[in-house]
Length: 114
Length: 114
Image (cartoon, rainbow over all chains, first blue to last red; front, side):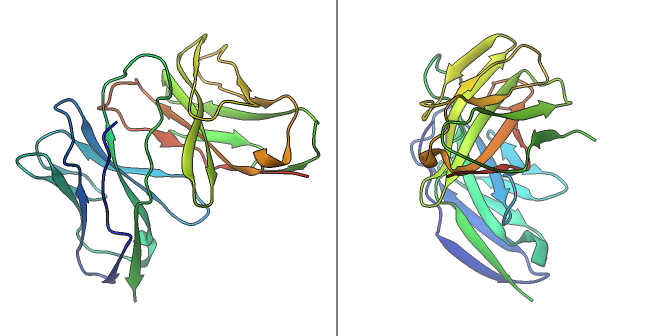
């Protein structure tokens, strides 16, 4: 899977929108853009994913650039419970044999101020 | 409730004493996977299974075994645990391997080998 680049940390205030950026300039045409988050002492949690079009679900929105080289996860109204490490991950087609895990980089540590 | 369960959640054991960490999902998912998470190294895949009786090595399979006799269960076996296998372990599952499907993670098993 291709590599992604995210800021190490971001800070936001409670009840304000948060935009978490991700760059993936080497994305291939069949790579899906996935976002996961991990709260302290918990397993990773799926947030949202998309291929080309912007996506919305109950947790967040995903805005994908037209050239797909970058994307932004949008939390519309952050709460203290959204404080976590957010991972932007590209998931391509199965290449057959060998390791096949999600590539969790360092992610963005989101800090929410009350 | 759709979920991935792991047992035990915490385990302290001694070097060489065989142990099994169970993983079960109730979503009829084909794809299952084991990860370990270590400080500074992120999550790394140990083994994965595309379906019943189909397993393959991830990034760090040494010292581990898995089996997939039933669709819902994917146990992780440490035949002779060593201190370097002290880690936080996560099981994950997905409906299919295709990149468009999200993965669901269990709550984690914290293993300490002395």
